[in-house]
Length: 160
Image 1 (spheres, helix red, strand yellow):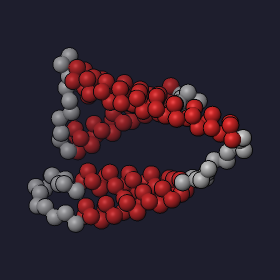
Image 2 (cartoon, helix red, strand yellow):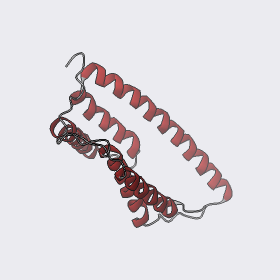
Image 3 (cartoon, one colour):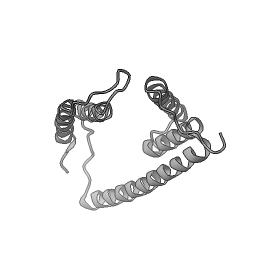
């Protein structure tokens, strides 16, 4: 099996750098406190560059030598697991949008970030306090960027 992490990381860095360069070519007059149309694409492409750097700088995991039958069974199990995780993630996105509508940002976001962490981490790496820390950090970070820095109203729910 070929390790594709390094080429993919390099591709992400190249794509992110090209996206940042293209975004910086946008010229639009804005008000003094308006971040303009460049902010979100630059943030998104910067995340791609960071992910690509992470893929390039991490060491590849050593895998044990498997027989052909074991490798096929392992691949089938991984495919089932990935499909189930994808279905759960799609369901969580729908649940998050409903929770935002009913409960609002400050209740829905920490609960759903924890649920996303729980799903992404998998049973072998799941730790309750790490999920709670991620939930608090994401909720606070989004609040600071949108509500405080950009003066944007975060969703309020029907109940709260």
